[in-house]
Image (cartoon, helix red, strand yellow):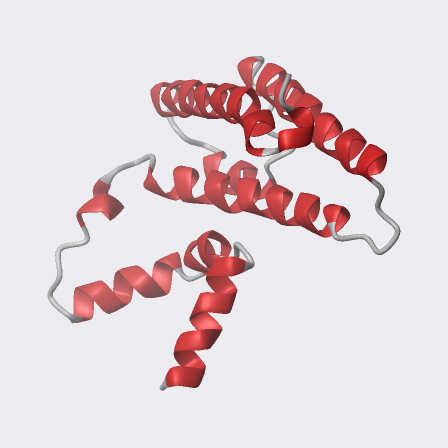
Length: 146
């Protein structure tokens, strides 16, 4: 039991929980149905796209994390990587504001064919999230604080 629990903790640390939840969303819904649990969040038309976006963002953060762990990484290289990531987030926000979700692969797959109101609401949420993330992200690293 402790070994499997540790596995789940490692998965959470690696940021794979959103992706695993996204990949298993149909199975999760079936499980909750079998347990006679009311999966209220499944009734929300934005639930699956939000989860897909979350999985995509965590994927990007995992990639950033791996870049920062390089063997020969210097502080200058570290700062360049972080600044580039903040610039990417701002670029993603601009693209999403024009209706381009291409950088978020999982989201693109589930967002196809959604109603325009749903897509507009999701677009606003993503823009707001990326804005807040890019605004607050530098504050988490002392080398980026100005």
